[in-house]
Length: 258
Image 1 (cartoon, rainbow, N blue to C red):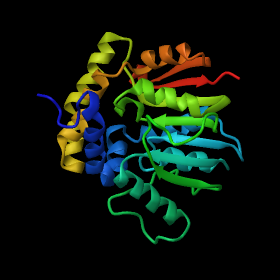
Image 2 (cartoon, rainbow, N blue to C red):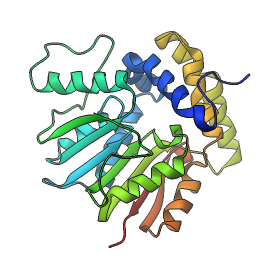
Image 3 (cartoon, rainbow, N blue to C red):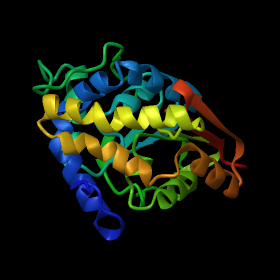
């Protein structure tokens, strides 16, 4: 049976928008549950790989509720978080206002990560299309995406855009679900995504199919090896893959040549 939130081609954006509009308020909670809290550690590592210094500019694409954008801003950087789902951005904005003392309590059912730190520099959230970034070439010292590239109608176009807006020498970092090279572990991991993760979605968001989507989207995504190949085709330097838990999660890293 096909997943109602997955469709190839032109309908992809509409389906993904419907998915994240549905789960926005429970998104962070279910991330904690399905990853056993490890997603927080992985996002901290992404921030370390981005290596943004105070005063530099960073863009977090498909920023969702803002975890990565907040963490980079806490390094003293000027940060833009971009997403195309209004409901996700509403949660991010509420968190930002709360950190500034303008909101007394968080959005209902939204739980900020335990290591959340208020931004120490400029941070803004904008609505936009990751495949048509509304920024000029060579604008950012680092461009990141966490669990978003896989959801685009064309991940290649999204990666092209990330590279375009990165400055020469800028870092491009991707964090997403991976495909383990080991066939036995890959089968076990896919079984977890197929059997367990939809149950978490049903219990905590009322929609099993919203989280069955993860495996469906991963089947159509080349994961870390495909992204690595594309980064090399673009001539990025110091390209590397960092696998986590045997490749079930992974980072892709590259630097835009001068």
